[in-house]
Length: 478
Ligand SMILES: [Zn+2]
View 1 (cartoon, rainbow, N blue to C red):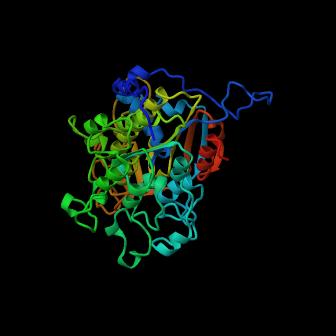
View 2: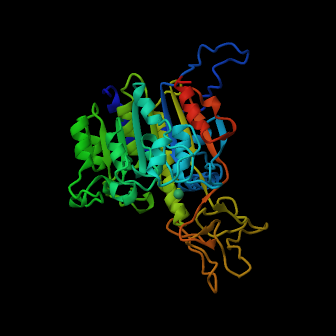
View 3: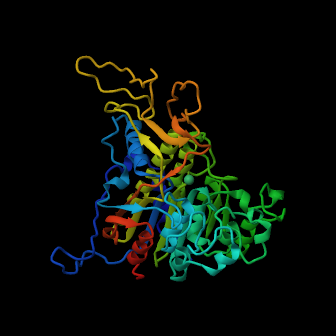
């Protein structure tokens, strides 16, 4: 259970402008707990009390570069020189993301690697690679460990935060095993797989042990009486959960802020995924990812045994799938803000902060735009000397093109008689080559950034399931 110490100050600082947190001590490097001479370093704790894993869903390296420029430009800088908070971490690795049966992975297989310690097939959660997707019996025969279960079994507090549905692949990987990532509600399990002992993902969240779960996805938890999509029309899983745990079920940012600090909290803030930052009204009742991170940390930190918190920016991925880079970058900027909050409100001697992505996207930064060129605009090359002429470069069709683009996606120009003028700005859909209804993931490595006890393990080129080992080793669970 969680108690309530100095959370008031912690939460109060959540509403400070980001500029108030500009300088931080985020260069703490742990190495391996040994000094250069190989002597145990008394000042270097061997163990992390807390671990926070930040997952930018689909946040490949091109997304990080573009978001860095975008974040800098939003501050009136040219942008390229800007440093996102986690880019100041001294420990960085490259991570190989493939699934056991897929060269280019999905979030279920990749998140399972990080939370169960084993690579597995595309589309499955918390079960091994011998299980067949969509087959309940083989899922039951091939369970993997779940980090969320181990965290609670060892007496630590557990938090799960996402801007996607709480039943979506990445958050579900913390607490659920499923033959198919799409079995989010009971009604989504095919008839021939029902009654065989496989629970839907929403039911598993409700029966699992955790302290804070915040995100989207109301529909999977309710029957049609409440606007949901569960088979039983009167189903109300959050009410069942609250009755069992004594916890608070909250529906908006104000209720979340007002919920008791010493009880578990289930916050579900939207019918499906939460609203893109690019589309939120000033008056939105939904908490931001930073709000949710602050609320989760404020509760979890009161557990004297420490905590594990997974924070996912789920909609970077969705912005890219829609071929709208501006949406993905707005999500990434908010993700960076949540990470800055965590940096500013934890002690690097006791909290390991990991920042990574589950996979990349076919997202490119192209042309030869001049320094400081609008990252969401047309490519305007550097002046050739003399007076600066701000004129967009043209392609062989005589038309300009944008710096940001996609290898495939809904913005494809492949089947058009004539390429249209490109859209620009935060709501633009970038042009792409191959026509696909949804832009796809990409298969190159992603980055892992680390700060705190055990951060020195993040180095070199590693398999994605090693992230699980890094977390467990930092907790001293080897
Ligand atoms: Zn995706």
